[in-house]
Length: 479
Image 1 (cartoon, rainbow, N blue to C red):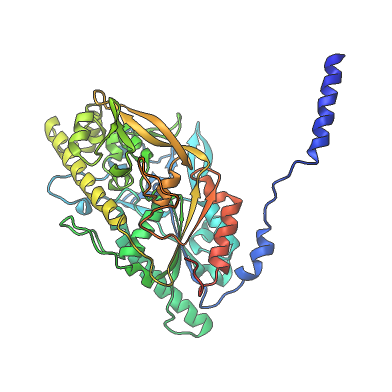
Image 2: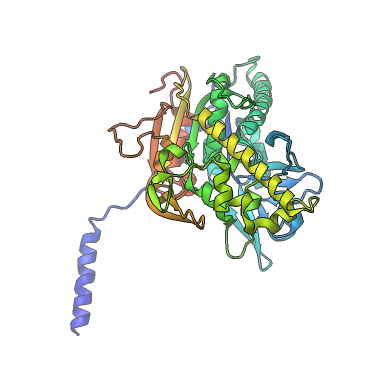
């Protein structure tokens, strides 16, 4: 009886105080942005969506088979020799990374990942939330419209998806982005002339980029479609891409790298216990992953035996000594699948080591290029969306005897990318300053409290993104 009385008292207390508890409310996006979304004229910038790593579907050009973007039901299995060769990039001595081509091509932004478990279809949302946000602002993409069965009328030319081979070098994909942008620009100019009678309008785009897509977009903005110099030097910041871009919105972008890239290259990736593993040697063929490694100067990777000693991730001999990735003895059966034409095991090891050296050298040059001080020119804005409420791997120790990795420190981030990485914050080590120090003067920063992918469906993200694209005054950029 006493228990019942105490329980009733507790319920009365909870009922009484429930009136003091605030309820989270969400904005009525339609009420706020309907008028702006329905405004169509020449000065409304079309939008290009740039997904992050693994955010574009990849298919075998010869057979049409899905290489990345679906699991089961006839899709590529990386556990099998042919599947491993399709998802990995080619390796060959005497060839540059750019010249190592295969038959796999990108085929659309990955709106959903299709999985078959025990014969049952399962859809995992990928970039569909960003696309829905853009749809709320009447930024319609004909490709997405066809995929969803929706009809958007004559407004379909206001948004485009840029799919790309995310395995390849980021600066190489910037060349492809330039070609894509020039093609779409000509198309939009034709539509503007047809609809408004204005010829050769100076069309500029707004880029919305998630994760690694932000690195690609920022490289393009600063350097245009030019490749990194072959002699290893750093290209000067020209802001060549600013000729065609007004605003860049970067979401959860690892501007200073991420520990997860190292973990994937060393351990491989298994997305679920029901799905196949992507082995370290398969991922190790992909230059883009190395380009997202954390910078040495941030002391993110340290010696387990001497934590004050930072590890040089761009020394290929370290990878061989630590038995990592392409150099791992445990990956020799994978190398045999990737290089079936090479019968000698030692020769396969040398080809893999050569590929590793090229990838690390390229990654180091890319990072140094991206870390140059660069003051944005008039009329160009770069906005950041940053997650900082999830404990995120910040420092790992390396056992110098076994090569094993151990997370020894976490810091605020989105679970994948640190807050400090998105900001490219140079306050490192024991030196602390009250203000963020970054080589890039970001126009503004919005902090959100969810994870790496969850950022794209956050209500605050939707509201702020639509404001930037639809209502931010193009003539007044707050620096």
